[in-house]
Each structure stands twice: as C-alpha cells, then as structure tokens.
Amino acid sequence: MSNDQVAIVGYAQSQVQRHAEQPLGELAVETSRRAIADAGLEIGQVDGFVGSAMFPTAGAHAAIDGVSMVTPEWLAQHLGAQPRYSAGYHGMGQIPGSVALAVDAILAGEADYVLMHRALHNPAGSYHGNPTFEAGGFAQWTAPQGFFGPLAMIALPYTEYLQRYGASRSTTAAVAVEARKNGARIPWSHWYERALTEEEYLAAPILADPICRYDCDIPVDGAAAFVFTSAERAVDLPNRPVYVSGYALAQPPPRRLALHWPLDDIMGAGADTVRNLWEDSGVGPTDVDLPQLYDGFSPLVYFWLEALGYCSPGEAHELVRGGGIDSDVPGALPVLSGGGALGNGRMHGIPQMLECYLQLSGRAGNRQRDATIGLASHAAPHVGGAVVYRSGV
Amino acid sequence: MAQRPLPVPDEQSAPYWKAAAEHVLTVARCSRCGAYSIPISAECDRCHSPDPDYRFEPVTGRGTIRSWTVIQQSFLPGFDDDVPFVLVDVELDEQPDLRMIGRLLDGANAPRHLGDRVTVAFEDLAPGSSVPAFTLDAT
Image (cartoon, rainbow over all chains, first blue to last red):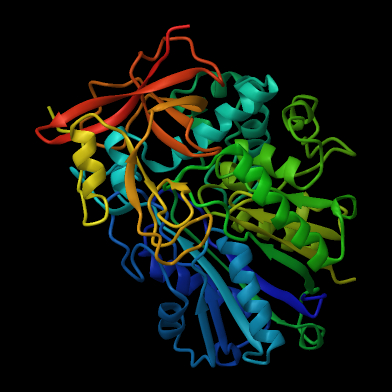
C-alpha cells in the first residue's frame, strides 16, 4: 500500500507521431532530460530507473534496445546516470507495473528520485504482419488455424459481449469519437485537430469483425517520462505533487491458448484486480472524479467501466450510448478526457496516467478540470492493472 | 500462392499432430486427476501435479460456440484466398470451460449464434500436416 507516501513531481511527453525523425532512444533521452528538469532536479540526483520495454508487435520486427524499445538500463546509461536502482516490468499492465516499481523502490529506500519512462516505436512496414511459415511453441496451437495477433484476440470477447447483451458495434462509435474529440485538443497528439465523426467510424474497414480500423489505436513513435519521489521530498520541489494512493496488478487469469481472452476471464479475474485496487488505495469508484480507462481497443472501455463498478455487467454500452462518457457533459464520466490511446496514438497506458497527472497537478492548461482523485487503468482488467492518484492540495 | 504456417511438432506435441494427421482430435489429459488441458503445460492446471504425465486422448470433437470473429485481414501468409474467414471459440463437451479456437468451415455468411453446436473437421495443409477446424451441426 502506497498511501500517498510517494508522489509524481515532474513529467515530459514527446510529440506522438507516426515516425519520429530521431531514433527512439534519442527521443527517450531527450524526453527524460526534460522530465528531470521539469521536476527541478539534476540528472545526478536521479538514482532510480524503472519502466517497461515491451515492443507489442506480433510481427517479425526485432526488439533492439535504443532502436525499437528502450530499457531503463539503456536509458540510465545514455543519460550518464549512476543509479542505485533499476528495474523493468514485464507484465501486460506495463504502466501500473512500472509505477509500482517506482513506488516500491522509494518506500524501500532503494532510491530517492526515480525516473519512469515508456518509449514506443512504430517500425517501417506492417506492424503485426508476420511472414512465418512455421508455427512452433505456443503458436502451434493457434497460428495454423489463422488465430493470430491482437485484433483477433479482442474480437472474440467483443463478439461475446455484443451477442450476450444485445449490443451493437455502432454504439462503440461513441467511444472512438469521444477519444478522438479529446485527442484533437491535445497539441502533442498524433490526432491533434483531427476529430473523428460517427460516419467515418461506421464507414471504416472491418479488420477482424466486429473490430474496425478506428477501434484500434494507431502505432506511433513517442516517449513519456515521469519523476517520482517521497511525499516528504516532493514538497520542496517546484510542481504541485500528485500522490500515488494505491495500485493493483492483475493476478494470473485462467491459463489459455495464446491471446485467448474469453469474456468471463476478463470480467472474472478482472473483479479480483479491481477489488485489490480499492483495498490498496482506500477509495471506491464514486470517490474517483477522474477515471481514465484504457482504450487500446475500444471495447476495453466497456470492460473497464463494468469491472470498476461504474455500471452493471452488460450495461456499459447503454451508458456510452446515452452520452455517459462525454467529458463535456457535467456529471458524465470523463473516462477519455485525456484522449486515451485511440485519441493520442499507441502510447499504451501513458495517456491515462498523463491525464491524471496534468489534471491533479493543476497543469492541464485550457483543458483544466476540477478533480482531486484520478484513476488510470491499463490493458484489460484480467491481465493489466490500475493506479489511483490523489491531488496534493 | 503462399503457404499457410504449418505446425512444428515438438517432443511433447508430436502425438497430437500425429493423431491430427489421421483426423483424430486429441486433448492432453493429466494421468493423475484426469483433467483435460488446452494447451498442454508442464504441470496440471487442476491438481497442480508437477508430473502430470500428460497423454493425448481422443475426444468427441463436439462442442458449443462461445464466440467468433470474421477475419477480413490476416497478418499471416497463406490466408489471402481464404478471407473473409470465421474463427470460432469452442467449448468442448469433455469438460466445462475446455476451450479451443479453430476455423469454422461453413463460410463467412453462414448464420451462427452463441450456443450453436459444432463438430471438428480437419484441414489438410501438407502431407502429414492437418489442423483442426469446425463445422456447424445440422439443426
């Protein structure tokens, strides 16, 4: 339990773009330098480095440190830092997992100032396309049938959801449109000033029915970094602290074929994740005034709304259809006010975390909302995780 | 035409693919507690025996559709002539929640519903290499 004993004290976010001009490692170094300066610190004071280096492609692209992914160790070396502590998180809930590492390192006294980063790369060519003619290991049970990659992964539980609850994919347009509306207001977003209409959504090609192009976040190059320290040290730094109240990471769900996510696994094991989150953070769903839900695929917003208890199972699509997630409507749940992954680009759980940080530190500029408790979720409820943040007043 | 990816049997899975080549669907079964397991693992999911001495036993190949997707764009080679094709998530009759995924060979336009009954069929990809799929039962 972190109990507001650790705070975020600075950040930086690069431009999110299809292909950056500089190599990914350079982007991560530059962004990290800015985050450290933003926190009012020198590189020499940063003695902890954490992050996730997952390169989430199903394609044949190589994972090369500093080129297509960036590890905390690579980053520390290239910043010229001498950390006492560095660690990488390897689970699916990369952002909450990395936050957990930062919090735990500080609480344990392993580091005083921890830099957490995430750098994501869009390689040339097809992101998930894979020319393999041989399926060995786990792939032998799925690839020969053509079950491959994350689109088919999410399409199965999405069909289950639509069929079980009599929902229509046309309702899901409201998720993508909401994300893009907010992303269009964010200058660093790939989708800045480019909102999406319901008509465009409904006319988009279906890739793995019922998943269409705009249900998927777009692959990008981008980096983000956050600086963490103890609540005691945070008060001496320039920015208003944002405290970590608690977090939860999913426990292992039922063992399945690779990328096989039955809806009952998502919601069943997801209930455990959410129960742990409320216990660890000491708050409940109605205390949170800035829930930021992961949306790498739009149906995940339904799953998180229901898992977190914002509506009953099977009712999220009705909530969405009724304007319940419109961030411009007072009283609605602003779950994509930060644009999410659909409205920024494939930055994994960074947009959710960043929106919590910016709003709760009072640094959201003309997008500033009145909020004191934020929640940032990542991945799916049964394999991911979530963090609760509290504004330092 | 590009060829579809072929399964590469390993020491553990060789009996499965040998049976599949003869159009017999088998599922790994724990010798200790009798639980079926998809996919095969190092230890038993139910009794957690670290030495389950798994055997691939023939099953009926009958089951119930729990979900599906229609693939319009495959990320693998060899499926270009097959798209759009249907993948079904099937719960096999042998054990609650025993789920596998295969192609539904009735075509993308065949009506299907959660709960529809299916039976295994096999696609012969190469000599000695057949993979399980499903067809809708006549109603």
